[in-house]
Image (cartoon, rainbow, N blue to C red; front, side, top):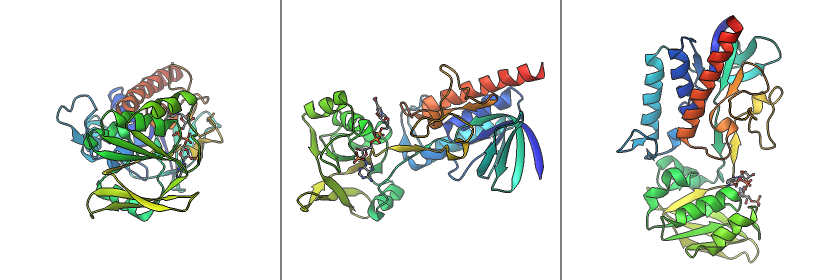
Length: 313
Ligand code: NDP
């Protein structure tokens, strides 16, 4: 089965849907494949209170539904399916959907996002699904823990940044670092060390996230040097152990950095392959916000539109 489209958008987070709104309105007749997690990372967030235009906040899933409806209103062809393989070697770009159907396209907008890493322990996943106190984004969820005690797992720059951000809202922040040293830059280490309400526990691993079957109430931890097991009180359990951009299928053709983020041309969404553009967290390891993803989604559609009109003239 072969099909051709002018503009393929891969991914259905704020970047993908914003690209879709702009591309549809520019008559590019975009086809958008939603991927395995329709709506992207925001569907795992409870309330989004920092996206401009929602003075009373909105839940992540609701916001993604609104974006989807807005893209559909202008004619985006939104489909279920997972892009399993690409071939960007020719003039027309080729993608495989569920290893089966082949689609060729003049332009591709990659909005596949990134996934926050979690520890993977059962209790963490349980409270993550319940929306009861597990988060991988302090900027998104920190506000709900005002004047409370929280835990941040990780010792890299993200963990320091999250801990410092939370320290301004919360009564106490405890950082759990599995080694006896940070991985973060000196300036970030100094910042958290200087902050009075941040406690740093080295050689410390999480054994269990404790809760009352609806909300997190604490964390059972183990000192891997002394083997001592103890509990700390916390209502928020924040993970900052890294993100993994969802870019594996592109690595044969696109320039990626050492973590896997797609490298785009400065000030544009162009990748090293003409006609292939990137937006959102797939190329952003710094801002990672819904609003910045939406902004680059818009940029990608405008860049793709310009590319198409140059092709046609
Ligand atoms: P990093 O990979 O740099 O750090 C991850 C941290 O999480 C490490 O301390 C690591 O421990 C720990 N960790 C990983 N897996 C586990 C686990 N299973 N259990 C417990 N701890 C774990 O990721 P970051 O997201 O912090 O940073 C990614 C990149 O982005 C870096 O290059 C960073 O410099 C950059 N960045 C820059 C910022 C800035 O400049 N303002 C802000 C945020 C990020 P261990 O050391 O033991 O492996």
